[in-house]
Length: 258
Length: 303
Image (cartoon, rainbow over all chains, first blue to last red; front, side):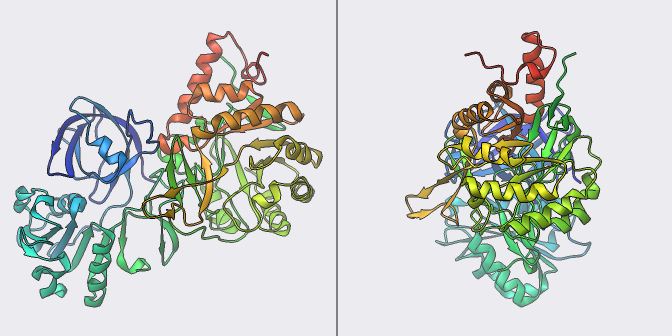
């Protein structure tokens, strides 16, 4: 059993990263519980009569000394749009920490982390937490154009950064699965992790399966509660329908019916 | 010190705040936030004789002041519950009530016989109102003969407290309530969800895999409240009030309308702490109104 909390945080910063992504940093008066890459929070959307349920977001960074955590919010619908209008000093309620984390790499593992769009958040968090030397960690980021990429240059301290864009405006042109880092020698990696659009993760999973490389993906099915009681966010797996919120959101691709 | 204890037939609740089936798992999910013993009871996830995978994804859609669900009674079956879940939860200091479901009367009976053997479960909620299954479920609960038949047959094999959960998708809910009372129900709980629908206009497709689903949340509260009031006036057995309860004021309204116990449901998805706030709110209300016992609220509507 993992302890979960409903906690009011205060917004420290809401920074626009590009046309659709925002970085929201929040602070708690309480000591933060341990939070691992891949876990998520379920956020209350205040003052929006048309929005009834919370919205789930991956955790991007945790600072236990400052009692802060951050999320990258991509505007997808009414809820996320409303949330990006939040301002420093506002109060925000979280149900957290939710879900299972990625499997940590072993010492000496070579890993490839692939993030699409706002799916970069847990990938960067995992790169930082992995404790591996830079040369063992490749991060491959995909987006439609350079404008859609989130600036993450500071993560070059933790990993080799590679970019793919559909229009070729940054990095290699094409999807992440067409990028040379992905196509050259997938077997060179001990573990592949991915977070992003469904189509992207399925394409990655297919290649990882063929190459017989350990691969975990983070799913984002529609959910209501976030803690395993509503049974709405189910994903068919080898164990039957499982909850993305409690059995995931991270799944080994071999468990999925993909 | 106010007295929050209520009785439902032979069943004593330390306070009238319970959690609705399908919104509190098997109480252990709530235990990750707080002690389930702080609440009067937990109506556990709908259980069937055999494992059920439930319906296909997508199973939910947010709607104004509420949501639709079409889970379809996903559960691992009663034997899995008895072997793997019951030992973990049986000593929670609260009323644990199993929500019993079946596609056939034989299923209901076989399941109830197994539940009857569980010492720490002193009641069942007989669900004849699930709108999200093809067979059984609501089919029994929308006619008087169907509701009577299931209630009568289950009554024969169950000697503890039997609460029958009613569907609002009927012409006159008081007729169904009286029908199950006549067959030995100890209490009725109402309402289950309203059969409803949501469409994505852009893709021109239904938002649920099952096309229709059950509507819950504050959107249904005024209708549920009206039905609870009607039923409480039509039957002699105690009533459990359910439907869009989000705060203490809502809970008190249901009790004034005649509910002895209330269930908090969809509200838990928005904030799992709401049930505790409702317990505090009821205490506060009683102090403000100089009430010693919570029973003074029940049926206290002034006309």
